[in-house]
Image (cartoon, rainbow, N blue to C red; front, top):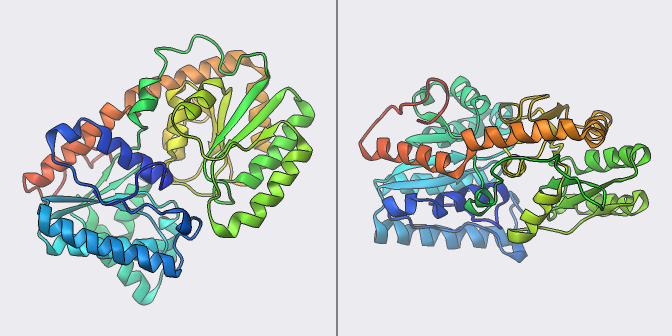
Length: 383
């Protein structure tokens, strides 16, 4: 496996952590090349920074060593977007040269815009990279249909494999939702889990928080996450200053382990007003804990959260409707209970780590058996 592992890499790292922690490690010998970034590289994703060149060269040498020493039959490559896509393409090319079959696990939240907006040589290069893998795992039918429409030759190689959560989150999953989420003595807590910046809609969320606090002052907000990109630093600083003026807003930073579970257990709902997404693991974590979800109808989110069933979907940048949805849930404990139960039911059925690992294993087995065309793509889902 080539890719980051949580807490590095956000949702990409979490997906890899889930695979490496699953029962698949008992069926296969799993080796891992961690492409996560250290503190010096924080906020410099997809930039031609000197440190990124250093990361790339070190990872390239390590990959070459692993390909020679381990002789893997399958290389499972995390694929994102931006400049990182070309780095990941070079890794897949080397893996193919070594004789391994390649699985590209597509996570990039803006890969659709990158693919559709490219022209000339750049477009041909992106197409070449995406045609290279033997299997492409995508997180929703949105991405399945987009890739096959853009590159028809991928038909039969693209499998929808929805994300899951870390085993420790699933282990903390309640058996059932017995009361409305968020009932407590310290006010209703609205939880945001994700990187802080424009991409995840932090500005929209802060604007909505101001509107909610005017109408329902007992609601408080927690924005848990680190800075997304370096270019967001000034914006995030300004939004944090505004949050102080609004009141009842906390920024605990990146949370993991017991602290994350504590926040999820104490939340009344989870919000994620992203501008673009693939399939956010934060939403799945909220569903696993029986929370109603308020998110934007972008990427694979509408396939994960059914509007008015597990929560509410809004348009990107729509702070007013975000605030309205938050206030509606805050004022109606029965609705929170109903939507929380629907979230938990759907998570257990479709997104549990055991389901996820079984689907990954089914793809591995088809590749190991020499299949050129993968089964389970008719409806977009892995078997």
